[in-house]
Image (cartoon, rainbow, N blue to C red; front, top):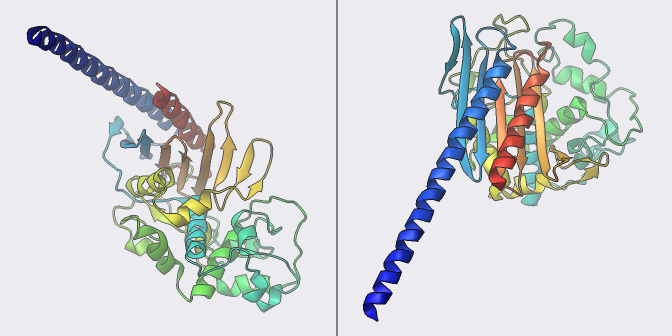
Length: 366
């Protein structure tokens, strides 16, 4: 009887080991195939851009982090390790700003429904809450009426000359809110970032570090360009080196610099729910259309395949970026590049990001 049991156990154990081995081999093959597909996507996209273009791509697939880096040289494409290199992330900054707001609200230091008239006397006749600034429902225009006058002085760095003086001139002016429920507004995020500074009596950089970067150990993330190490060269539409955009009054709009490594730490927090402020920022606050909604900073897309993606992109003079996360499946992707916002093919950065996310979601279901 014992011998029969022993033989049965050995056979069962052998079958179990074979099944485990087969599963590991299949997983490895899927991983290799997926890596090849992602590489091909990135290569096809980078070919549309000038020499010296760089892509730094980070992915979270079933909780595991992966990085892909490419640089286009005069001699062809090079695969590079650039996950700690620093890019200007443009309007992805807005997600950071909204996460700071949500973090402070979660700690009871700020009320999301606080009216800005409590911060600025001149806004007494406007109903603008911090929450409405964060979800683009405040009624503010995309840019302040006096922005063009400053931007035209330096078209290659349009925010450089728009400082506190110009910002307060606008806030003190007789402006009107539009009646569109959702209106994407850089002005709104400029006001939100500045409001957070006034309420807390801290700089935007201090808030960024204390509420987001330090808790998540995002060591390459800053709104101070002079602090950033390993900065990637900013390229204009023709592929020539250009300046990083400088943000003064509007740091909360597009002033953050970061790396793919850091952005994956941020995205990981969205999938693992390890940061209470980020968790709050992901919650839907306004329905835009049948398939689109918005949280605090995050745009939310209900895909045709039944997934619910949170996303944001960014575009400045020398950089274009995009990130997508699915907190339910635990998958995410970020693409950072030094493709100019003015390049005619810049929309392919978003396409690369969304196509990659689609592949990731399909892979994780297998």
